[in-house]
Image 1 (cartoon, helix red, strand yellow):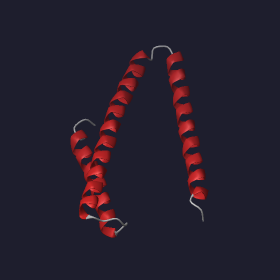
Image 2 (cartoon, rainbow, N blue to C red; image 1 turned 180 degrees about the vertical axis):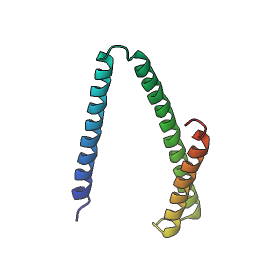
Image 3 (cartoon, rainbow, N blue to C red; image 1 turned 45 degrees about the horizontal axis):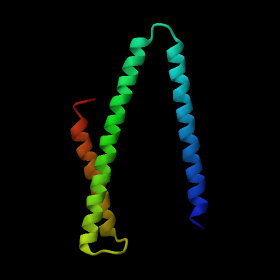
Length: 109
């Protein structure tokens, strides 16, 4: 089975799902703007979303940094093939980044 037979439908599904989510969010925001007396609610929702975006950047930054360190360790070991040890290093780096994210943000929730 060719790789493009898997990747293209998967990418199409992800794009359609994302577009649907963006559309639903836009409709909800429009309705909230049209309702009278929801300024405080709208302001609190927008502030919450802004904080979520900041935390999402932190999470992805930690993940990318941890994976870069994991790849550097694999390269320093001289491994050129996919081995269980190399996969374990990448999984450990991913898990470690998520734990660091949790400990950095646990007081914010």
